[in-house]
Length: 451
Image (cartoon, rainbow, N blue to C red; front, side, top):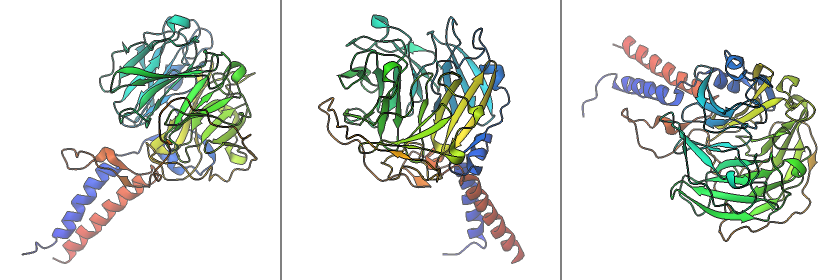
């Protein structure tokens, strides 16, 4: 076969160009740049352009984030979503933050009122937002959905069958790998209003509610939460009212295990709870402190010190300050994001817990609790046992953790590149892309000199 002179250089150049388009997907936004520069166990402020103009609205607190817990990250769109509103507003609004432009947007009113609480979540596979409607008793079992790809509209799914007393401010999240459902996972609603607790599950594949788990613990309260960790494939739930320090772990087989009491109160207008993308452990921020819960086994708490201590500007969602603070796991950037509003002024801070390889949707259990090196003591479990809440099978934890640069099978786009499936840690994307470009340029110049 005749070899075309210089074809290898051209081929590598083409490969480098395609790799740059795919691996870079040019994650050159401000948040990605900041995350790549941060050392593990540190905080940094992310300068904003219009956040106070968008979120700084309201007649009482002066912002839309009181009595809210978190924002929801849409990795496919590089966008954070948040539903919130000040006291007494006729309807909540949907807001978004685009990392590509570092700008916030007011996306208009929702069909519900109240506050944000822990009512918003996302099905990451279909990119549909789900928001549990503020309500109590027989009027508290309503959930609305908003497809991101079509920018709405809002529509209500089937109300869940009432199996207990429902409170106004409860928890909801998406359990991505739940036994007995389709590959998309399921919506989980934690109703802490029912004495002893209640969990209900929505399967998007069947468009139906299934299972009703009750009696695992807790008083009848509100302002509770539920947060899912993709790395450990478990959810942490609890908090609020007289359950402020009580937390449980939900496994994929719908088994619940009491965890050691939280060292500070957790829930709405207490301490925020968010998973760390690297370890999958849960981070609790409030009262000027940062704690980490490793949920494996019986569970272990550790307080993080040194540079991991939250800066004063991050605020305190708990008493006495009761600052408006929402948190969000930005999984594919390897950081957690905190939005803090004081009256009409809002700021954004980022915390990077580890420098471990990050998979946007973790597939296995983490084997270490922290690699930050931040000082702190550990609080062990009290030997709490597991409570079987259903007849499901399986452990809900398995598989090895994701690796940097992991490639997955996916349909290619028109250029033959599965861009959305190239999952590089954000700090490595720009360097690898430019390395490919530099290599291609060098080869082309060398070919020209040898002609």
